[in-house]
Length: 273
Image (cartoon, rainbow, N blue to C red):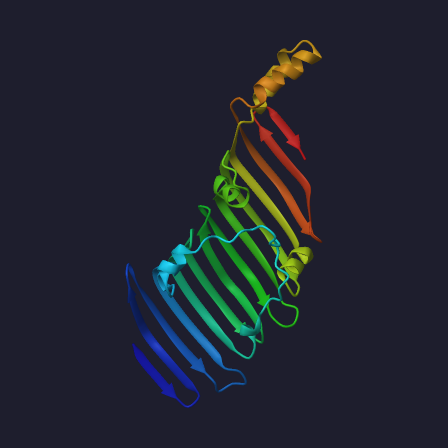
């Protein structure tokens, strides 16, 4: 690496850090000539596994997972944004794959600027759930921190999403989502309650296993009595699967989620929610 220093400036360039499996390249500079110190960071690596940087990986592996019993879903602890105060900077980061515990994020690119407790994301993108996610916007500190962002998630695997969120594995297909999100508050609970979001989503090739919508339609068509309808529907509903497309909107405001309109198409059946 190279070291550069003169009055009010210091930099370390062409840093190469070798660790098992990969090499990390970075540059760092600090400028204290202005009103606030300014840090510039450039980082590029193919892969980072955070487990490698554990102080004692054996002890970490031996830890038992904490029980969720009695824990609040959204923390009421104050959000600490003091790291944003009294400093500025620019960040240009590229990581081929980031492994964090059992989660893997790929093709990460971040370009951001920090100034006056405001971090502006000019570009954050990564691959997760087999889809490409892009985010831009801002994150601000202060006594009441918050964020305002626009985002897109393109061609993600619905099964991966639902497995992560709801532990369900019977729904597959591709989904794309775009939207905006803004919120503020002193803790994560207030961030959720104050969230204001609008989203548009499109699902294609969505297959629900154990839900046979066309079988229900056919069963109703051949039924002669009300009792036949009930019996045939009960027999047909859970046998087989249904492939459908989904288009719709979801709005979140004041802790409530609303759907202005969702259209579901499955074979000859079209439904609106």
